[in-house]
Image 1 (cartoon, rainbow, N blue to C red):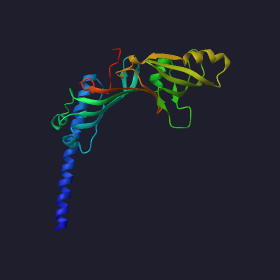
Image 2: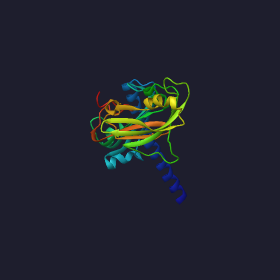
Image 3: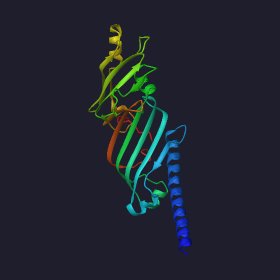
Image 4: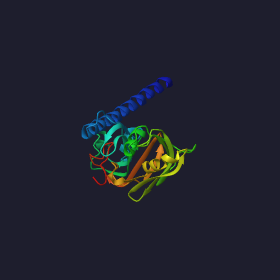
Length: 246
């Protein structure tokens, strides 16, 4: 008898979790379709709705996280890049959450991230074979300052060179400067130094605000911007943000 009761309970729990997972998957699909259509993306972005089980929103009145990520998308002013949005602690009732109706709700924090790999960042430098790496055999650091090792053929030369560069955020401005040239021939020093010196206004980047973090990860340079106590809008429910200057 006990075995039968346990079996029935197990079936009930499995059905409940299955139904919960189906609701969460529906919400993710709805959000992904909306983002693709709104931004004209070639495919639906990777979309994730946090909180397990999803039904916990009925008790907490919150969805812990909603995330969107689009890979290899064309971003104005940058070219091809990876773009991501993470929205944290969305205050919403269960009915609206189940319908993927988040516009007009409040979120504790929103983070937009733009990842530029060697192709994307190379476009900013006029290089077609740029490789980006962490210069040290340790976990990459991030914040308002970081470093990267860049390797490639700078404009006006015909051989690859390498340099360690500093990456710094100074207010609204991103600055990159060579810190160490690695085995660069003397006659190429001016060209390499000039190419690896860059200044950008991060408010022109599609991350919603001025960047507050720059880091090197996975062969890319990543810029992030956070905003706090934000009203969720349809435009925010997307992997791609508008520039602060836009």
